[in-house]
Image 1 (cartoon, helix red, strand yellow):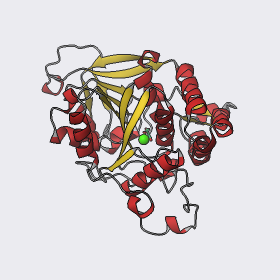
Image 2: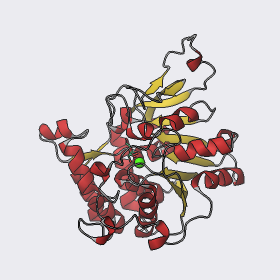
Image 3: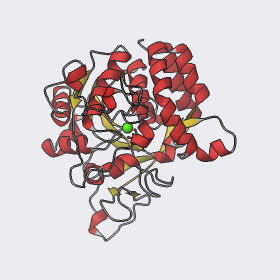
Image 4: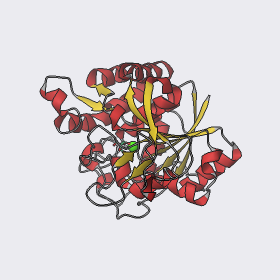
Length: 343
Ligand code: RIB
Ligand code: CA
């Protein structure tokens, strides 16, 4: 059984990852810790609680995290990908013109059960101290919370079972710039700080998540066979699939006649927890470029040369996924949700 804390900026593909983790018989989802990214922190937090309630998992803890990155100025939220509400504009009352999109962001407590009293970083530290080497942190948003937890508790890497990160890209083009992926670009300093620490850390980046596409036929099978869970995934993915098909990673496939589709992204990080052998990795010192033209780029030392530059010395190896058995991951995602969803 893998005990998981999912750090998330829900987010349409985050919702898919939450559904997969909740349904998976080999995962005990302990908590969601929320972070800015796809949407502002208030919407991310209320979306996290709404997703859990809709999926029948109200007992899963939610701890609210960072509203902005640790160093750089905040970037605009990806509402053109995830909708103005962060959930494909299906959050109750968020349809264009409805009150929810015209008032100030609803705080999570305004609509849902109370949040954990600890913030995301302290919640992660307390959980890791309470169950040493038992909990896997799965980070599928900007890494601000994880970096803050590491700053507050430098022993955190030795207190967790592992750290799995959806983010970055090595050979695959970026999705926010030619070299940068969204989660790393949203807080490059946090990502770079994490890779200086000696975790068991694995990066599940665009090199593999752009290989695992979900077509409307796959998503429709969830709506047809996974009740509330499938309904939420199908309805919240309409806006997201349209973006991917018109201008994202599915544009070329669409122009060649493929069905509308989207990238799985976050659920692939959950898949790595339960089936790491579906992936191959490259390992070496990892840096994330903090500013300039290549800001947010993941730079990986794949050869282990004895570089003289200090930027590359005395850094532990980070594992970065470079290939994946996409069909195996996709089928596990679909079958687990269809066979084991709560409601
Ligand atoms: O680049 C994809 C990542 O950025 C995913 O985690 C998506 O939810 C966004 O946060
Ligand atoms: Ca995300």
